[in-house]
Length: 452
Image 1 (cartoon, rainbow, N blue to C red):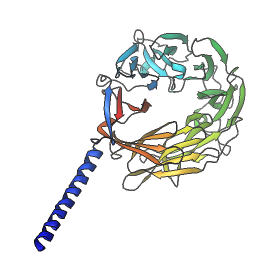
Image 2: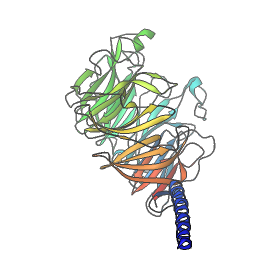
Image 3: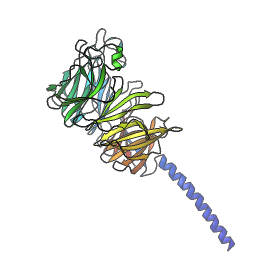
Image 4: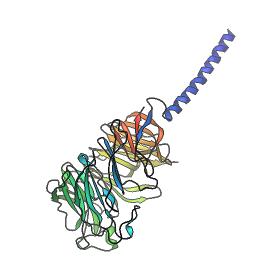
């Protein structure tokens, strides 16, 4: 009996050891993306860019086409079944001109870009020198059909000094193409407020209206909503000038709305009723319906911490309860607005960054649910009732290693997938169940991963 008992104990011990080894092996295979049902594998990738080329100034996935815009070309890649990122079309700006801007959205399958030549010492920043003498600036707007790259129309854009502008001078939505024209120094009545707003038909380029911008204001940023065109305006005293006025009380950023049919001004209100928001504040339009602005008043570049808030307005310009950029939940890094909800990634620091995924009710400004993440988050996107979160192994990493999927209604985790090979940490899109990630200069413009 004792011999049989010893054998049983030995076999049990061996079984336990094998079970532990099996569990460790299964965990390792799952973590590395080698177990079916737990993995993300690469489906295809576009050809690599030339090393050292400038970063893209825009990337989009529209229908079955992924589009990348760079200073030297706009390129469309097919992503339908069987195309596997093959180049469909490409536009190269003429002569020594370069792509200098694009609309952040490709509405109704139409993409807006602008090109031109830059004047003065600023030329050559993107690696392509401008011709000698005064450049024409970012003076030509071009509309493409994303499906095949067909040029639908082009239109001139007024420029004042021949230099390339920053972001936010083109917008597309609701059948409209919005162009911010620059005013001359004599026309500009407030510092930093040197843009007017013009609307064209998105598919034909036919003029629709010029917005009734108040005389002491200029257009800072715009977005097209379902019923109104929303804008951030820079408004100040007439003929205000001097360096103090740029960040002081003379000029402030306001929230405004224009009629989508006529361009008539419906309302123009302070972003903050308590104190002016200066032009050196970081103000970004996060959503049009409802209008939500991300307002960063100050930041600590070393720590990544910012002070400010997400400020929301109703259709009549009345402010709603806001959401602070920093609170008990931590510092909000990224957010996406869908209807009356805002989904945000927030972090706190304790021997590294620790992230949470939070849902806020924009009607009340209150949290709906709050879920802790096991890994540092790199970005999120909301598709229907699902939230996709891409995570990194650590905050020191520059590659994606994990995909988490959550229920948008209650924050329940629905899926966890590990990438068999690290994905580049760029913008990402979802297309037919695949995750499509943008790459950096010298790498693949787009890489698609699928569940396995």
